[in-house]
Length: 609
Image 1 (cartoon, one colour):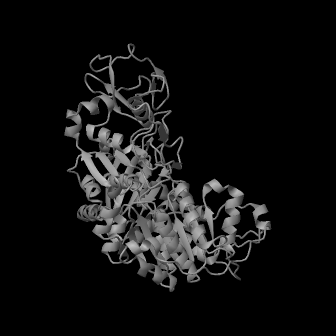
Image 2: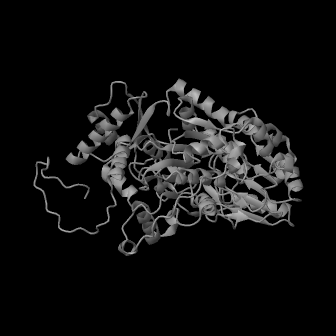
Image 3: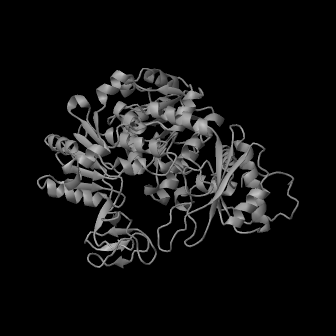
């Protein structure tokens, strides 16, 4: 219940309210307005957005009283912000009640949680509220601990899915009742009902975890930008890298830039060296032990002083196999899925899971060859090979199935997938090896270069400065743009180049785009019904890959065995609201009349191809 009025504009018969489950006002006018704005932007239904914004009710949590709000904390000292020319001024503006907006390129090292927490403290000192959205629970815990150390208990809550339904709802109620004015959390915290919002922070806004898989698929960055604009709050987009969207905000003047000088960057960043494909192909060490000589020597030296991080883009053992003679991918005879090597040496299908005969039973259907070679080597296989090469050094793995939070400051090889890198307990990793750069750069995606640099910088930022011997070896072609940006430690340069390319091609974020996916007849019917703006351009539709039965489905994939199509609708800047309104109206009409199969609409899709 959001309002009671004397008369209704609904022409039908109204039903009486039979029961009120709770007197708690969970959908305030401010939160309802935000939900409407998000639904309008993403061509979605208001009910879907409200379901994302309001957590499930737990009656027991409502009965517990909420402690009173603590007194305001003092304004923080600049701390690590003194390393940035405009950092102290940014904190002062927040503490004095201002609403500065900035894109923050954080320096490498372990100091960013404390710096982010100081920005939150400065906002609290002004008597206003603050929200910080992190990509995962590990990052949220680091900021939570840093803020608690600065301001003590009672000033903020941690909102993550790991907290459990009752604890999360109790903390959410503390924010809704006004007893807590700061929230640190993962994606769902973007809707936290913070009163008098003074600062909205998002860390690493390129991480795909910030994009909700549930309809209508809002992105935390865009939701926080809406809140900052509507509630006249400050904004801080932070990360070791920089997104194209961040470069656009700086380029248009909507946000300022918070970055250190080149001298400070060089003093805090590790030394970065590269090994190109040609050097790796000529290197016997790379062929036998999978590590180029440069990476091997770097790891051996670094292990004398501390742990070494090895980043591998793929999880598993040997995720992809091919015929050794003709290089044809090894496929399953049942569903034609890719064959993988299990830990025990047997072969199985990566889609249907069927076990298939290994050598000498396997034969290539193209050339008749009987030997297989690995085209992509996973984390477990890499850890096994390194363990055999360095038997006296412990090897630890961190990936999707088992993510390590921290590693001790002693010699060890830490093999990790991107995003699962443990935080070293000491001054940092002695070295980092970034393997298989081609696997990140060759992804058929518009954001491949930007994403590769982000993952490299996230890992390299955990390495000690070059003055302390920290070294990063990237196995990638040094002539490519993202590799050059890594060598220079200059993500702004790559983001500006990518933004210029997208402006020339008319791709987001310069333009607004929507993806319409579904059965061919459904996509055609919706596009025909939608009164698209005159400036709209329809790209496609094109057929989507058919998902074989048994293969794990990713968000947005069609049901197994069904043939779907995808059409992209592009409009110039200023027409995004009209595009979303036209698609939402057409979708509502189709659902009301049950006209044909349902289709999915995703405004500003992350995956464009």
